[in-house]
Image (cartoon, rainbow, N blue to C red; front, side):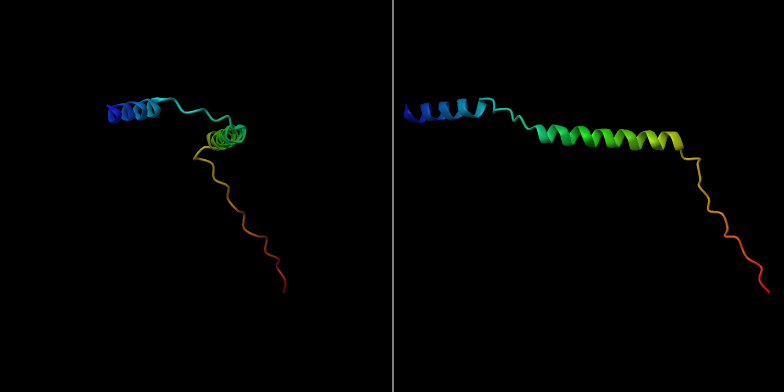
Length: 64
């Protein structure tokens, strides 16, 4: 009888809901990561894959 009661108590303890963490820093970090990703993705969508920034050849001076 004692073994079954111990098992029932252990099962009740395992089924109880854990306390929710109230960490503000984790939420703030996740929000800032999402904001940075949104800005970078918007930049990629605006520039697009067809944009190429080419370097011009340096001006050559003609010295004799």
